[in-house]
Image (cartoon, rainbow, N blue to C red; front, side, top):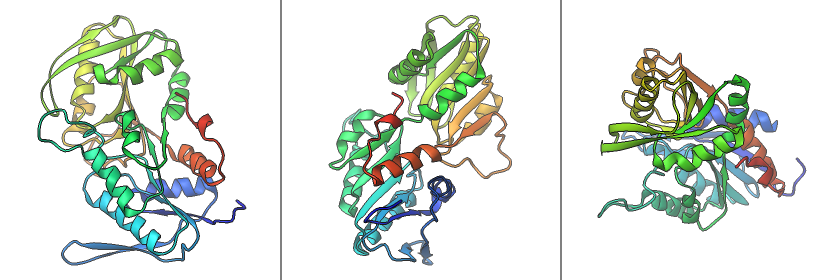
Length: 316
């Protein structure tokens, strides 16, 4: 890559596995950085090589714990103070995105606050995949490259060659995303309607659309406790579906998620590697298929660095 400002790719600790793949795809060496951890848990990241005048890409998903977002902010600040030309945060999973509005009184808008923090740290641009709500892009006062992971999921779904395929939205909020998949794949759509008893707890659920005799793929942006998708899968099977799969970009998979997926009637759960799966060997991961977003991010990083249009990287 011939350019006046050298490109450098760094990673924070929790996304190193993905940053390594992105660097390989770009045919670049990973930048050297380190983190000093103090006795009380405080930590201090440092660049172990010069970034002066460089376009610096820092890869880090901001899932819990909060250390992950704070480590990214400190790395951005360090790059700024080390005279980097541009600092671009590559955030495959943008955490706190479910707090995108005041859905009840006296609560914060967490996604906007995270956007403000990135701005205050000195970030010039953000790259992310499948935001929980598209309008979060408007929370930033600098460019946001919002990538759709559908470009890796659609070929996989086509290769399954499923007959009588239907796409399902797990709730009313996911109807737009599911509709885009059903339109591109040319198949019918089902909407699962749920009533929540409280956060992370699903009450009753019903389906709108033809279920009987269909091979169904439930589409969502993330799977957290897996309560919604497993309940939806069981309900769809009861109503005569031939098979049910789930597809989600971000495998948050907290609490009882792994056990729920293993025990459910889901045939397969297709996710990306924006968040690493648990390293707990006791968890059953046999139904989970991971596809990598590294090539998509590498392609967008290359185009942004070389000031090319990235519109071809978007499927919908």
